[in-house]
Image 1 (cartoon, rainbow, N blue to C red):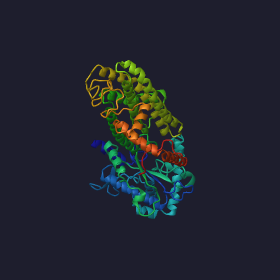
Image 2 (image 1 turned 90 degrees about the horizontal axis):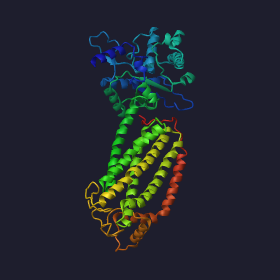
Image 3 (image 1 turned 90 degrees about the vertical axis):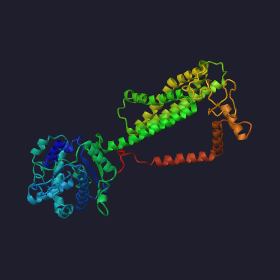
Image 4 (image 1 turned 180 degrees about the horizontal axis):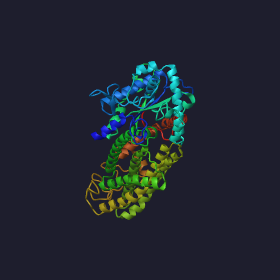
Amino acid sequence: VEGRLLEENEFHCSGNWHGSDNMMSPGELNLNSVWKTRDADSDAPTVSVLDADALHELCVAEEGTLRLLEERNLCHKCPAEGGESSPKPPERCVQPYSLVGLARVYLDFSDNNIVRPNAHLVPSMSCDELRDRWTGDAKAQFTSILTECSNDMMMIADGMPKEEVLARGGCLASAFPVMTAPVVDRQFLVTGIVKYTSSIFATKRDHATIRTLFEMDRSNLFPSPDRATEGASAFEDGLYEVGVNALYATGRQGFYEMYLMGALTGDVAISLASMVVTALCIMFHTRSPFLTLLGLAQIIFALPLAYFVYYFVCGLPFFPFININAVFVVFALGADDIFVSVDKWKMKRRKLPPHYTTEQVAAAALPDAAYATFVTSITTSAAFFASAVIKVPVISLFGICCGLVVAMDYVLSILLVFPALCIYDKRLGNGSKSLWWSLAGCGERGRACGTPSMSSVPNSNNEDDEECTILPDPEMAQSLGDANSGDAGSKKGCCHRMLAFHYKILHKLRWPLLILSLAAIAACASVAMRFPPPAEPDPPFLPKS
């Protein structure tokens, strides 16, 4: 490793790094920073990075970044100016490739009428000296050279062979050969004002360095122009990244990907917590580890099945990170399907004579359960699929993904939960007392410990009946009426009492709630219609830092 680092340092100190593939290739994860002037979005911008004060701000920010990199040994270093002959010369980080570096080289060139081979390696003058020497004439002459060089680079970018461009004897071949990559925006060729520019630092490429740079960026340790100087800044806050392609297209493992992967780790932890809470709720409601396990299988298997349809059937290869949130949707809808199916089964088992077989109960209960869950699933899926018409791909694909997940969850509810209920009923009907089938272990269909026998007291209103089962509408209406009438002789179960309490409050406040809901819908619709469309189809998720 030490040998490789020495070899890389020699390569950087020879001056060959500037303009090489090691600097510009998308696979090279050098630290990059992008600067934007404060009025870049204005129709008539007045601030240019080539202004003396703006160039000084950028220089101070770069020096601050170089100090941080030197302190943490994250950059490639070369002997400082004038120290090459010392036994142990002081070393500094290689000067970044930026407008500041090119300005220093230009001033050095104007003094000596020749571009010294290594003038761009380490800073040849301080930031204050650069600002003092950056006169109007120096700016005008540098702007002329920069325009010529940028035109040459545009021709290369448009497909003209580099050799042909160099043969024309322009800027790149003669006066300013150290300019090897564009550092201005396209509008500079029209307006002569630089609104956007970037700096490329010669940082190391190992994973530990990239991780350290990422943590430094998250902690806002890298200086931005507005933090580096006092008073009004010529710039908005700077953006740091690693890798040229990661910076502009987010196609490599840069800070963007690291940020999202870190957020994804937190989302996975929340998803696991959601799964645990869902499992506990299903267990509390069914009192059956068997039904809980099959219910979780229904929910979890819906995700890969939905992705199969998403990728292979719909032909959608792009899977944005926001689609991970479909996990929460399927846990909520899946648990609801399980509750409805189990309640429908228990209601039918209680209402029907005790000698009815599992098949007869299934014939009565499962069609009702299938219809009820179908209505909820189809309406939810339709709502998600409706978002497919949105022109923002991330939101459109999220809606399609969630719609497919809900649909697959319904299919698995039919294929897994319904047969599981039949097996569950048969085992309890055979007198099984295994805790695997029911934590109550009472060996009786539809019954949990602490509840009366379903074969002896159908539709019992006994005060010991604490099982939270939703009754059919007529019985629910009767129970609500009993609760509202204050009949002391009719004490309902826990769920009945909770539902009656909430119903009483909602019924009293129904008209104010309706008015508030309509007002909220109107207000949200009015505000949403004022939102401007995104400037890019795939908006960045990184916070501004």
